[in-house]
Length: 366
Ligand SMILES: *Cc1c(COP(=O)(O)O)cnc(C)c1O
Image 1 (cartoon, helix red, strand yellow):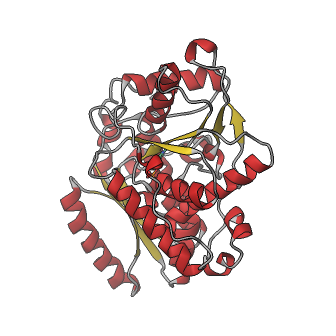
Image 2 (tube, helix red, strand yellow):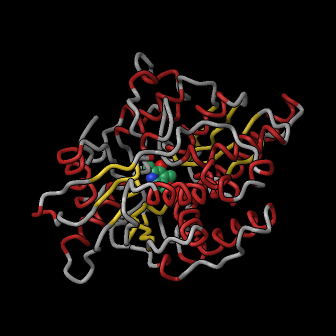
């Protein structure tokens, strides 16, 4: 959060945070062969290395969300996602580090190797997991669990929305854009024409869009939708942008009250495929390619699809960028210390099916 605080010092006092992330995350050059459309400046923002033992984009949000929970005197946080949610895992791991217990309310999803790994990693911390058959059952289940925990502890678990994408969580990505500006000013990379990022619960994209505008960068955001449109859409992104701008303006009137520039609203839909977490040929090709040419670990639900949009644009005469930055939002830390020797049968029974049923056909690693 230092980059934002350097520009708006009074926010330091008003935005409590727990330091989890190792910032700034590095920026590395992406050298693509010319057959893939290389030959222009391409860079990767390495949020895969944002923290240990588990990196990825959720850490930036959790620094603020977990600090607010502690400030409000909560003992437990409750959050939401699908069975293999990166956000639920990050919340469980880092809540424990912040001295909080966590409860995850999870719903079904397409099976994949990373779902198994994330579930096993939950066994390395004290988080409580619940699996409900659909979103309606999850809502009822969450209400029941809230009551049960309040009866046991005398305190209501603090609610963290799915993906951590409240206005407060989104501030973590406003900071990320100021961090990027500092890296541009330091000569780490030239100001990129475009910034490609996966669009899920939208906190990452909305925060970056707000941060780019507030930091005075001309870079255009290219959000690549990987969730159904009722979850990721322009109206929702603009609303989260405004709420986050209003929150920061309230905390420091020097922070501008902004509306989202429509340049950032040109959401890409064509990589989504059949449904959330259903891998696509183009997405998995991007995953394989980044492993081969750059040694980067992407996955099929978010970053493969986002990278597929950039790779397609590099080949398209009318959409080819002059330069681009890819925001790598997936965890890049080796998870084996978290999962070695863990037995899935210690998970609640509803999760065993992810280990006993096949992975989706396009998944490349078990
Ligand atoms: C959650 C997530 C995203 C999307 O971020 P949002 O802020 O939810 O839009 C992208 N990539 C990965 C790997 C994620 O886990």
